[in-house]
Image (cartoon, rainbow, N blue to C red; front, side, top):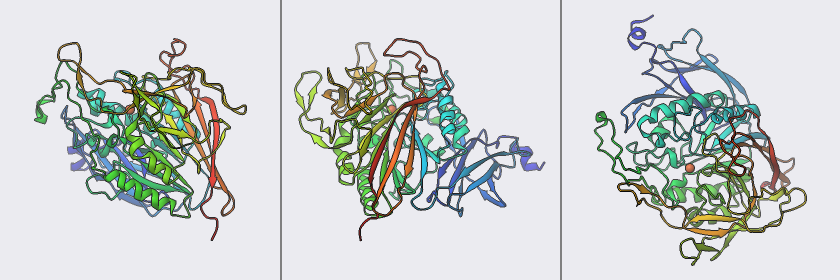
Length: 540
Ligand SMILES: [Fe+2]
């Protein structure tokens, strides 16, 4: 053992190993990990190549702990190929037999592939607020479907609800999802619970330090939003914290202040303080989105455009957050103009699917407090027949997949509790109608009845959720599996089959039945539907 190894101890042992796509999913990945202390010569080996990892440490702004993360960009690979890699360092306690795993690169051109998605994962360590054992089974479920990659649509681990121990919560998250994320890229987007006090201008330092994500080339906003291509699909990952009205990020409710460790030098955060991000990019994200969508729809090798973001434009959750007018105002018109096919979100801890929507119904909402008419820009369904096959060139289908592993299951919906069972007989009658809550203005912290305690109000408006097609009332846990069929001829049809698998019985308490449940590894099919559209390579 060298003198350097002795000095550094075994603090460089890799853990929390995970992959993301590099700049080109057909030719590379990024391998990222953390170690308990600083690593000496952290590196990835793939075949005979040794790739040095770049260190990216940070110090948590509340408890003052330093976190050591490493990122190795692996390029020059062949499309659609399988590679083995290992991760090590000179001061890796497993140096004799380092961590190793296998991954696949994306196929070239119009090729079939599978991806999966959910959000709101948390960790299996129930000591942490909103964590729950289902989180481990959720990772196993992803792995069981062997997708090419997974979209993790925000609220990764709720570290900001455990402010004194944020690095420990992130560590449990990373150690849990390594069981899949070391074998295939997990591509995240930020949610409201990635927003942390004293961790960077938007509170994303913990998130951004752990992930290396594709470049968006917008100075100052790297990692917050990005896009990548796999096959004929353009994936666009957004940060809806930038546009939503609701104030859902880091918050000190009181009565006590949140006092950072003395080593941070940061003053206490007083009750009633929240980190509210609406408008933080000054329009830069929306301008980037428009450029990205326009380029995608102008590209004859792109058939599909799929968005992932965390907050919902169309959710009829009763006990969760509901819908947000900010997304409807700023982004739904762009989704319409550029024929976005699918929007995958989390935030409400359930499963809900919309009919294809295009355009908006004016003045369809009512203020909760007064009953006055409010223009919620209600998404307009282009059909309300639940046929099981939807042409998304005619309208965008929104999916809420906040069904990862958190203990805060919210499978409780506005009015009409029936989940409906539409295929093939069409839609069930809607009596009484489904209702959705909608944030149409900010809900900044307000003084509660108790001295020095603050709260944030629920959504201020409500509408008939005529866009809501299907809701899972049996459980708040599941994973969505997407199989892309690129079609066989230029100008023909292409389709994506979507299957939602759910973990019945996993709810700590089922809101519909009151039944107590427990984490379960059993994921069974809830529903399958197909989206279809014309390929963009027809005509001259
Ligand atoms: Fe959320």
